[in-house]
Image (cartoon, rainbow, N blue to C red; front, side, top):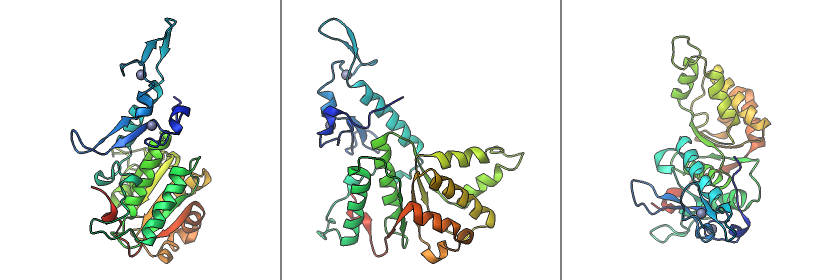
Length: 278
Ligand SMILES: [Zn+2]
Ligand SMILES: [Zn+2]
């Protein structure tokens, strides 16, 4: 299925930036807002929004409605967001959720503003999908996970391709390990679990190197990073570890890959959350 990243009529639309869809954060039912079809697409719609989105033209020919690809894109985007494993509080967060001033009137500081423009230029203004990702490093509570999720959400919304949030917990490695045990429900899935992550168009690896890990864990991580590096897949890594600790993993092989595939961004001394709506 081919879905439009943008169309001619919509490219000049500032509301949806040419995507035909936008996220409306105002909550009507439940906890989240919802994706909406943009006015620029609604204006072209001749089918009243009724499936299968066809209409009769002036010459009595049955036509597909121009809204159809965007309605399908909306369904698909909702599905992608359900499958991405993003933590609840970062689900549906976008760069627009940032304010340039905190509620107490403090203007956004230079570093936070720099990260904002970096993501804006790299992911939103850019005409193509990014080939390089980001590595956010710094103390806990500086908004690294939030920024990683915003990057992931922006890309999934814009390009309608799958993304995944991966928390590198002991649990994760346990699941992998279990997949080697014949009596476990995950038996035989190791290849599938890893292959899916290697091929995922957009991936956030959260809490990288949270502990040294065993040689086996480091090897699993190296394989994942190396596969994504080889295919130039967009990867965001967040870590609380000092960089010289990361360098020790798998004899430096992981680190040297990350340097190639990610822009390193120090986040120390920041509290991005005070600039976030909601
Ligand atoms: Zn629009
Ligand atoms: Zn229509």
